[in-house]
Image (cartoon, rainbow, N blue to C red; front, side, top):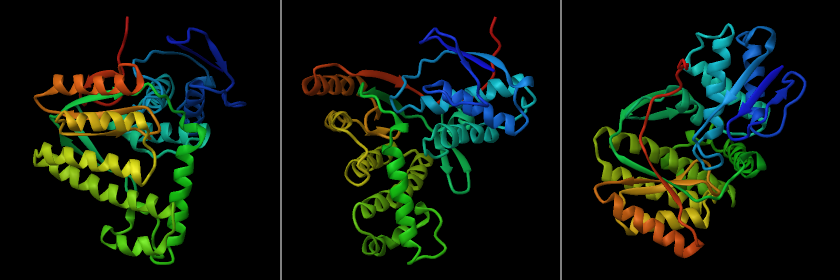
Length: 321
């Protein structure tokens, strides 16, 4: 039996995690417990009391579900026989909890970052091989919250996943060894476009182009070319908007206002369909903030929450009291 309580919802929830998967945020903890039990790393007897506190806005595209699952995996493993689980193992537990138990067909990116992040660095993740590389990052970042909440278990993310899998199935006629859409050669985009119909064509072009764009962005960061890196952020958002169709009018308003104000770059963050945008800023941060606030208030009658953020380290254990 698990007992969980959140500081946002101060009500104790009792979870029979072996028998049922409850609704809401506690489902992630139940999924983590199931995965740790399979690894023989769960608390003795399969029970624990868990208190959850967070300042990550839920549904804002900031990977609150991955943060919860990785933190729960770290804490529950420490109570049991899995205290020495590696960061990669914790990320795997959290990923499977969300994907296999909660039913969100996400990738492993958010969980890997939550487990393996390094302070003042970006992390390049090759999802097919799970190879990671830390890259120094000194840029100024803002997160602008649209206030429009998304629920990724609701179907839109799963729909995109299904479309990408359908594209892979059709492209295997052209390239039988293809396993991942991201592995399609970028120089074969014309061939890809001929092989697929809409909407699979647009989804596939986005994935292949975004993969190449991400690798190029990592090179630019290593060379400290923030201006060129920022331009790729704008290109990425436009691809998300036009080809992957996962943006929203609110996100587009923020990105357009940031660009007019001279921000180095901006794009939606997270899966999209609401949530937040991330803005790369230079020395004119206050001008950019004011411009975004004015544009958003004019369009939607409210001022968006804007947070200054920085890259920090991954999950860690701290003693309190």
